[in-house]
Image 1 (cartoon, rainbow, N blue to C red):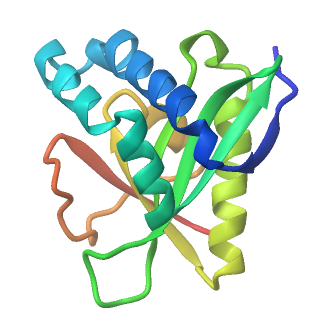
Image 2 (image 1 turned 30 degrees about the horizontal axis):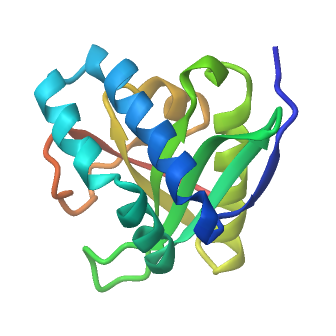
Length: 160
């Protein structure tokens, strides 16, 4: 079943609902592949204040459906290299909306924004939980990627 949703830029007032949906994913979904203690520590990283701060450092999108924010995704310049690369970050969808097309709509927006900036490829640090989603979207493991700060992610890339 596909959910009709609107994709729009993040607004300052979105910090709380976006933080909440990220934290729910970390604790309810990502704990299938990662230790609970690690996910609890990550919850601290995604406080409403930090999420709002991230929105000032990168282009962030939210998906709205049924009167609520149901997903988020971000796009930033990849600071790990002097070459011009863009990277998709912080892609999360409310658990009850998984498999309903929201993540794909968000990634369409991120990929389109990257193309508009002149990117010909897009990198991302896939969680173990998200690898299959990204593979279905045409991403492959990126052996040439500089290392990410988190060692428990799978570097992936897609030509745009």
